Length: 100
Image (tube, rainbow, N blue to C red; front, side, top):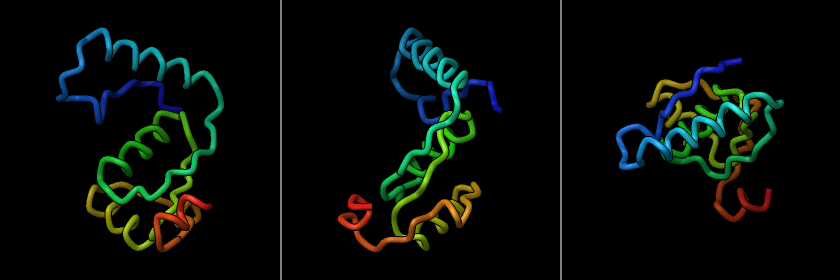
């Protein structure tokens, strides 16, 4: 399990040190528990997909990506991350993704 805390998507924004410390503390606390399975509904942007991948890498979640499989795989390739095919529930619309 990766126990190092990364500020990943938080880096470079205007959150103060105390806010980042709070997030880091919450992440470390979450890493003491078993990861939970989370439906990541339509992660069709770099930020959405990378957020889920980073949370999985930190040992917080087991993501199940719900959305257009080809688009999810394309974004994963563009940002250089691996998304397992068995973790993608391929659906065409936002409504269908939300219903699953």
